[in-house]
Image (cartoon, rainbow, N blue to C red; front, side, top):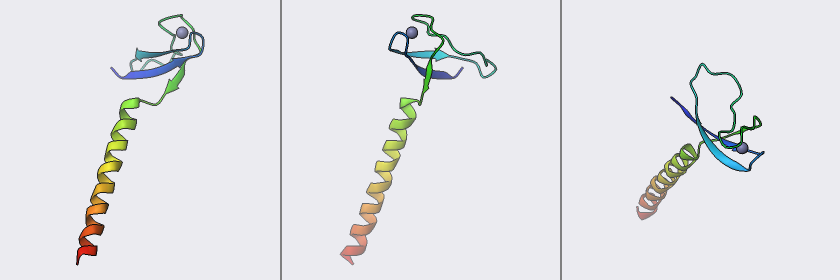
Length: 70
Ligand SMILES: [Zn+2]
């Protein structure tokens, strides 16, 4: 079951909610029961893309250094 991160403006907390793909009703805050949750982009995917970007840059740096060395 996918996990979604939400920010609840009613209680100011960040909450994690497990939802099935077939569930289409608006999620409710498990802490205060508020229905105004704002969907957040997963922090995991942000960290992952950041690492990939760093790795790509290091590859470029090595390639440039190699060419300059010739
Ligand atoms: Zn709340």
